[in-house]
Length: 328
Image (cartoon, rainbow, N blue to C red; front, side, top):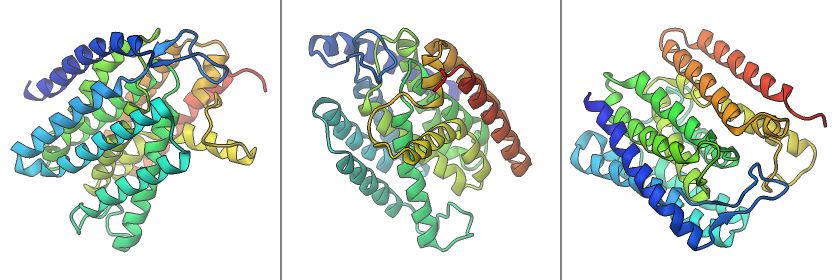
């Protein structure tokens, strides 16, 4: 009952704040206009992150300020606010891809630097320098892939809900739960409030000001899972996003395409192009994520079997999406 408050409050705050933001964005003409690389057909306000991220960050900071065991939340929350502001400027004016990427690297490096010196994301299998180097690489990639994958109505809200609730299912009642369960619920609740306005047909889009800092915060939660010993679960929960984004970018590299440019080549985008609705595709991802949550919980006792099951489930979703994709 107490935990549910940490979901309901941010959901209500985010829902009302984003709803109030929509007419302001329309009045300011901050709109995503349909083009040959987009998946929507009407001009839609973008910038829900301007409401969602400050709410999540403020609640994380308040939690860290009042509870000594969660002081570690303050730094990622401040970093999320910085990336929200930087990405909002990018939404409005546009920034060079290399500049954005360097900013992500600096933020991730700073957050890894302020982590306790004894934190190991590979359970001590690697020296500290190599452990943190790999964690930083994966974190920066996750920030960017979360941004890349924000391409149809509902998908980012569904993925954030899946990861947030998955973290809660794993750690609630355990020692890591003191640090991770409540912030994960806060992120999931805020995502639910956004999802109510982003479900197809979307009234507002997240924008880079939301997707980039959300990728940062979710990546932080997943790395904390890995550090707490739930390494298999940290791979399983975001597995669909990791696979779709990674396979797509490798294909684009093989075709010598500019990987930083907008496109419609992700599995989920090609399924929409092939005739499935945004709601249908996002629902398929939500169902898959629910199964992945179950496998993540199972991975506590059966890590390798659960990973194999997660790979199979993700492959089935990708195959189903590919089946609806138009012929090349």
